[in-house]
Amino acid sequence: MSNPLNLTATQAVRRIQDGTLRAEDLMEAYIERIDARESEVQAFAWFSSDQARFGARAAKEGPLQGLPIGVKDVLDTEDMPSEYGSPIWEGWQPRADAACVAWARECGAVVMGKTVTTEFATRKPGPTANPANINHTPGGSSSGSAAGVAAGFFPLAFGTQTAGSIIRPAAFCGVVGYKPSYGMISRIGMKIMSDSLDTVGMLATNVADCALFASALSGRELGDPDEAPDRAPRIGICRGPTWYAASEETHALLDRAAEAVARAGAQVTTLDLPEIYNRLVDAHPIVMNTESARALGWELTIHPDLISDDLRARMDFGLEQSPVDLDGAYAVFDATQRALPEVMGDLDVLLTPSAPGEAPEGLGWTGDPCFNFIWTSLRVPCVTVPAGTGPKGLPLGIQIVGRRGDDRPTLAWARWVQAALG
Picture 1 (cartoon, helix red, strand yellow):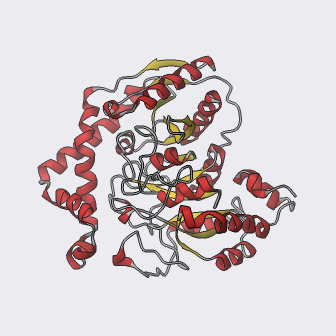
Picture 2 (picture 1 turned 135 degrees about the vertical axis):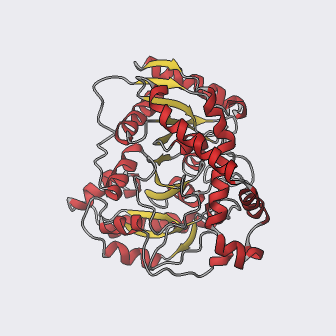
Picture 3 (picture 1 turned 120 degrees about the vertical axis):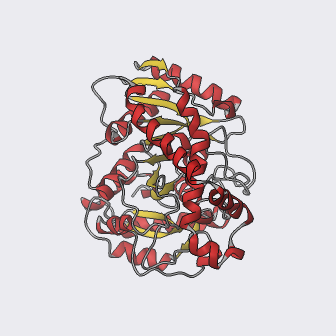
C-alpha cells in the first residue's frame, strides 16, 4: 500500500469509509512521522502515542472518521491537559471538551494531542520551530498547529485568531489557513481573550480539507472547493493601511499574484480602502487588549507574577483605556463592518498579503499581524494559500478575503486563486 501520508484528509476519510484504509494504519504513519521530527519541531504541548492509537481504534463513523487532528492548547479537552501556554494553568485538566472539539470527535476525528500556543494565544512564544527552517519562527499564536500540519504530524488542526494567529503562521509554514466568519464555529470551552475578535478556525495542507473540517464542526455545507466554478472571479487587489510594512518579496508576490489571476481569466481591479479603515490600526489593539485584560481578571489579580512582562505590559495598556477610548474603538469596528459590502461592490474577493514577508529568524517573536488584524476586526472569512518562497527559501502565502457569511464562495475562490498561482 502507498504511504497514507500522501493522501489529503478528504482522500483518507473516503478510503477509511470504503474499507481500503484502516484508521489505525493512518494513525501509525503519523506517529512514525512525529517520532522522526518532533524533537526538533516541538509542535506538541501534550502528546501520547498510546492514547492516539486507542483513539484511532475507537473512532466514530462520520465525515471525519479516523482523521487525526491537532488541538490548539487554548481549547479544552476532557482527556488531556489544557494549559493555555501559561504556567498558571500547568497541569489543569478540564472536565469537558470545548464544543468544537466535542463535535470533531462526534464526527469521527481522533485528537492526537494538544498543540503549542503562545501565552494565552497572545504573547510569549513556546518552543515550536518552523519545519521549513528550524531557526525561524512558525508564527503564532497557533504555532504548534501550523508547524504540525507542515511537518506532517496530522492532516488537520485547530487554530484560533484574534489578530493574525491562523493566517500568519499558516503562511510562514507553507500550509493553508482558514479563519471563518466570526462566530461560525462555537467558542464554548475556549480560553477566550477578546470576545469581539476571537475566532476558531483551522489549518490543513489544502483548501478542500479546511472546508471538510469546518463543515463538520459548524453544520454548514461549505461545498467542495476543488470543483471548478462556472466563471472566473472578480478580484480586488487590496494593499490596505499597513502596506508600509510589506517587504520587497511581498511587493513582488502581490504583483505576481495579480498577474497570475488575470492571466487565468479573473477581472482584476485595485481596491483602496476608504480612510476610515486606517482607524482600525489604533482601534484593534484598544479592543483586543482591553477585552483581554478584563478576561484575565483572575490571572492578573491572583497570579500576576506568573504572567510574562510583555503580556503584562499589553494588559496594562488595555486597563489604561478610558470608556471613551473603548467606545470609540467599538464605533470604528461597527462603521467599518457595516460599510464593507458597499466598499467591495461587485467584487467576489480581495487579494492581500498574508504576512509582511518570510518568517522572521529566531523563536522569540512570532511576527507582525499587520496584514491580518484589519480583516479579523471586520469579522470576514480569510484563507491563506501557499504562494512560493522568499529570498531565504521560506514559504510565502497570499490571503483571500470575502464578505462576512460568504464562507463557501470564499473557500472556492481561494482554491481558484491557488490553482491560478500554480
